[in-house]
Length: 287
Image (tube, rainbow, N blue to C red; front, side):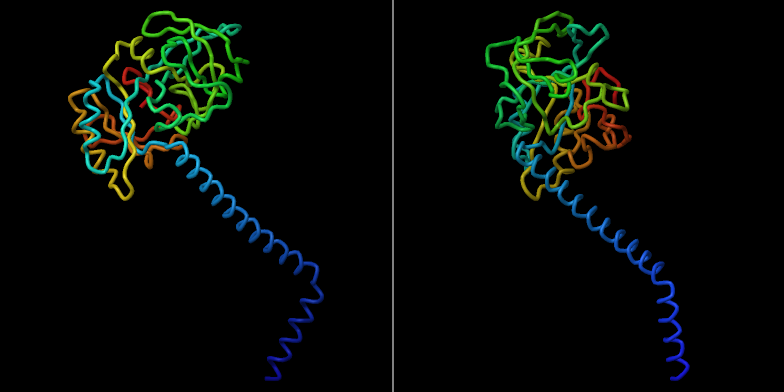
C-alpha cells in the first residue's frame, strides 16, 4: 500500500510539473469531441433539410427513360400495386442561341408537370411564374443558368427544337429537387454558361418532338412501405416494348452522387456519375 501511495504522489507531482502540457492535451481532446458533435449535428440538420425539401416538393421515387410510349400506358402503370402517383413527361436535349455568348450552349428541356406546382418534382420558383397554357414560347430556366447569363424576365433567345429554330421567352427562374447539380453530359464540374435545365409547357414540347399523346419519361411516387424493387421490376417489364431503360429508384440514384443504373433490361448494372441530376435522352451516351 505504501508503494502504491508513493507512486500516486509521484504521478500527481509529475502532472503538476507538466500541467501546461496536460492542459493542452485536454484542450485538444475537448476540441476533437466538440468538432465531432458539431459534425453530427450539422449532418443531421442537412439530412432533415434534404428530406423536408424532397417531401415538400414531392420528389419522385422511381424514374424511367424510354424512347416513346402512348399516353394510354399511364393507366397501366398507375394500376401497379404500391404505385401512389404517376406522371408522364417529355424530355429532350436542345441547343440554345444565347445573346452575347458565342460558344455552344445546350439545355435539358423538361415538360412542366400537368399538376403544375402541385405535381411530382415541383419547381421552387425564384422569380416569375410557370409557362402559361397555350403559350408555346414560354420557358422557365434554372436559377444558376439564368444568373450566369444575366437573364431577366421577359428576355428572349432562340432554341433548336427537333431541328427547328424557335424563339423562347423567359417567364421564370426556378430550382428543382430533381436537378441539384446541373452538368452537361461528360462534364465533371458545373458550367452554367454552357449547360442548364429549362422547363416548357407539356403541349408545346410534345408538339415540337411529335410526342402528342405520347411520352418518353416517367416519374412515380410509391405508397408508404412499398417495395421499390418490386415496382421497378414490374414497370421495367411493362415498358420493354417501348424501348424503356430499366427504371431506377431515387434511393440508389441520388442526383448528386455516384449511382447505379441498368444499361438495359438485363441485370447488368454499371456505375456512372449523374451529370445533371437526370438522364439525358436515350440518343445520348451519358449513362
